[in-house]
Image (cartoon, rainbow over all chains, first blue to last red; front, top):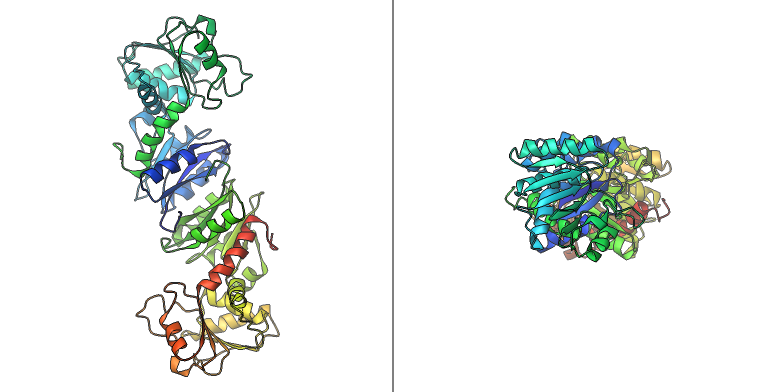
Length: 266
Length: 266
């Protein structure tokens, strides 16, 4: 029940209608007994500055989840950044302190790792192929490197973008083995699809699935459809499949604790 | 259930914790089957401009209820004003059109009138004493003059503010009989308390209640406590009492229709 005393939170995106974060976060707030509500805020990139200024000045505004296309730009409006946001150069969550400061952090990587571990998959020691070089891929790359994988290989159609992520990974984790290569999935313990291929059922697969080894864990970042063509094909090959929603589920707790100021990041 | 497709509405105020508008409007939205939610936005007067700019740029923002201290200032951010807002020089509701225009209107007066009529009290032909000269008093004065009262007398400690309202009433309703006088309640059919005296139980009464005629309707704008010391004393004198909440109840429908674009103002 929203009252005059309710703390306001938002998810900021363009487009917005498809986001499922309000449902997930409001369930979390309710379970936590917090008098807080998350609402959608639809803002195109051109108007991010003015909306950020308004939200910063809103006294009962507690913070927001940030998604496409604002994750990199929002860093410019933060007074402070957590280590993952600094490493990636993007934030998917911004907390507003009682004093009106904006603190950004990036939970895509921690959420992906948390989701893997919750399903019993620890990537430590594994050879990992990461497909894609967008914002989610960068966050996942940094998190996987920090989780002690044996080797991280990044594959992307535009190779320079993959190289840029490798640079970020080495800056955050100087001892990590990371390199850029082609999207050949043979010989990996974990293959992560962080491209947007799979959002539409008509999309081509991001890899040649015939080259997947049986037993490889194949993980999606795409949440809808839950069972992407890649996952369906991987399962036929005898791979272990891991849904995109596991990442969201793990992030809900991380983000909720951060926004409410109840977690280890508070 | 709030989703990414939910239209966002707000009540904007300082302080905010005491407002009851979110509960009332969200019940109205739900009953209307609208995928819409109203949240509190706490903004001090110094930051109204920046927050208004942000809300104007928020594509799924449908509008807001405006209360203390923003009702007069918000007029400066509207692209268009309804007749009551123009007459009063203040707005308590701002609708955002699909094109991003802000349309302000003032429903305090229409709400007060609607509440009176819903309780079976038509002020047409009555002599009316209005106590106070703030924003609510101005809106109620214009509405009462438009409802055909026999005479409207405005009483306020600072007489010049009462005179200013009388000027507005005459501008909107050139044929209305309106004057400024002392707060002596004898001889009136309707006495309206639009001062804030009564918010605290320790407040002095706004009139000498011993001068109330039995049978006079004594109406409050103050909503909490519901039964103010004035209403309690008036009832002892044999007056008919009328609660502040009747005004809110009537406004909820007027404001809801305006914000959703379903009413006669749409």
